[in-house]
Structure formats: structure tokens, C-alpha cells
Image (tube, helix red, strand yellow):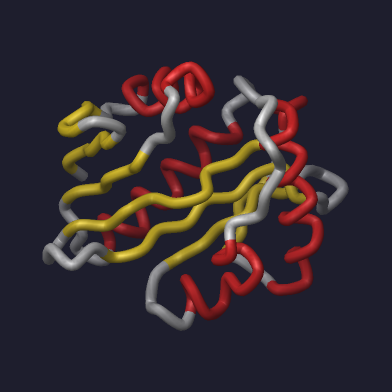
Length: 145
């Protein structure tokens, strides 16, 4: 597996992976609008978005971040991993890549908004604390970088 900055040629494969990940969790597989135009919502906005690719060049994960209005604070978005590859380090590698990029940019705090009901987002509520994130408001976690 390798992590790369977003490239448009992987757009459709990424979208399929995200919809599959949502479906595997029993959610209605709707697509977030920002994923239809990653260049506009992340790259042209001066933030970042990464893809995890397997040995065949297929998208198996993704993550991005945006800047918050509060200086030095960023928000993580769209951390998804192909269902068959969960708990194999893909999500951790993506998160570490995003955090390193944020830190290099001078961002001091990363935040993530988690869904509700909590039972549907149980993986996120277990994943982020393992990586140093702590809840600071209902459905919100943060980490000092």
C-alpha cells in the first residue's frame, strides 16, 4: 500500500470505495458533495487530500482536511477505508499523513466531527481515541499536533 496526494484519475475509484464503505456499515450510500470535486474543495482551497492505493493501483482509502475559522485549527474529512482492509493500518497511515501535513503547515490542532447515532459510528468512536483524539463536545474530538 502507498499513500499519494489526490490525483483526478482516481476519482471514480475513490467514489466507488467510499460508497462501498458506507454500504458495509449499513448506511444509505450517499455521496458527500465535496468528493465530487476534490480539487475545488481541498486542493484549490489550499488544504490536502490523500488516497491509499493497493499494489494494483486501486483506491483502498482516503482522507482530507480543511481549515477552520479559528487560526491553527483544521478539520479532518472523509477518512474511509475499503471494508475488507480495515484494521490493517490503512486508516492509521492516512491519518498520520494528514496530521504530518497539517503540522508542517503550522496547524496546532486537528478536529473531527463524528456522526450520530453513536452506534452507527462505533468504528470512528473507537479509532480516533487510539490515535490521541479526545472528545471535547458532543460528536467532536480533537488532538493537539
